[in-house]
Image (cartoon, rainbow, N blue to C red; front, side):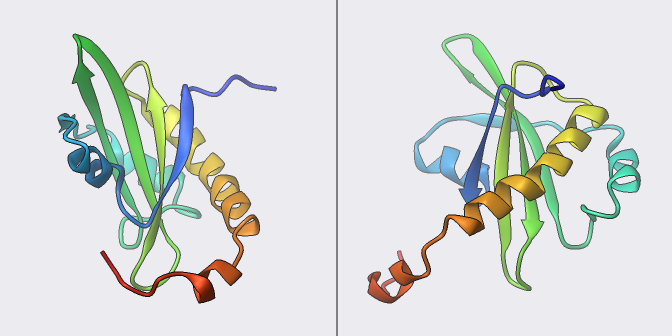
Length: 127
C-alpha cells in the first residue's frame, strides 16, 4: 500500500475547516497555490471549480506549523461536504490530487455510517 502524503484526515461536515478554527480562536493563514489550475485539469472528473472548493493554509501554535487542505465537494445544490487533510508541509498538486481521490471514499464511508433516524429525534433548532 502506498504511503499517503498527509498525516491525517477528518470529515468536517458542511462547514469549512476554517470556520471551526475561528470558533475555537486558532489563527491560520491561507496560502494560494500557484498551480491550482493544473489540479482542476487533472481532477476534472471528480473536482471542479464551479461546485467544489479548496482552501490550503497553515496554523501556527507554539512556533510549530501545521498545514491543511480543506476540500469541499458539492453534495447538494446548497451544501458542500468538507474533509480536511493535515500535512507537515505545504502540499503540492500531486499530493492534493491524492486527497481528492481519497475524499470520495471518506465521504461515502461517512454517509454509509449515518443513521437517518437521528434527524427525526434531533432538536430542530438551528444554532
